[in-house]
Length: 313
Image (cartoon, rainbow, N blue to C red; front, side, top):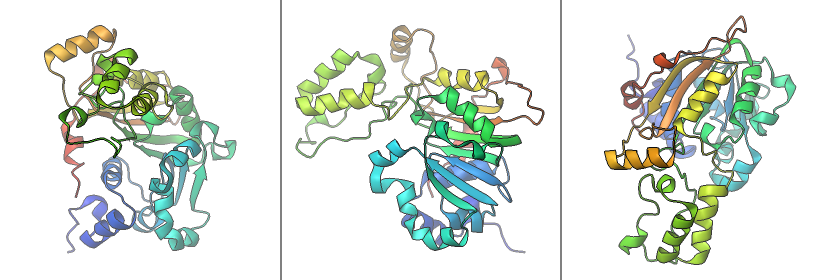
């Protein structure tokens, strides 16, 4: 009897190394495994929101019937060759082989064409929801894309209320001496939430120069790169949507010390959940189209099963 591979997605060590090296996949594979533990992917029509897993992985190895990846054009422009769409160039032969069953689409999910409605068994989305500005509207569009009974799986982080929720896409420029202790860390944990824009700008002017300080202000407080949803905002959006909330968990917890927690709650009234770095959720379009939402008391904050499955192999 052949022994099941202990690696994610039942990959061999050579296969895992291939996807890590050729396609630069890391957490992507682990998140897909977390999804697969909840819903079998065999024979499913899948819509991936915010990325594109390689055809050889999802069609050939996992046996999906079809896989459609949709990516926001603005995000692609920002990432360039680092975007997964471009990294999948090494999979071109398999994409051609599965033409009609495997597709890439450059479009905001909110703007996807009507012919996608009612076409998918599963929506798979990782490291994406924190970037969707019109999240409630996007959820309704995703709901329409699913067949009755279809599910949406999302894992996304870091979110705005996390210790590193600023989600800065830039690092310290080479023109600065990074050995200087004042320049080794851009934000202190939760610093983007504890400081005003004025305080942040003044802080960076002291440590860097005006050009870099302006960039930090833009990406932290103005850029459309992130939506700045707090942890509670996501659950509110999920409950208010047309989906039934099957599962909701916080992930990758890092709790502030009591004095920081108190300061965060004072600065942001109505919010108290600052410990989680991300969220795992499974939503479902109910077969009879009735809206049954998870009760507030049933929201799960058990993160251990998620964390165990996300080790980087």
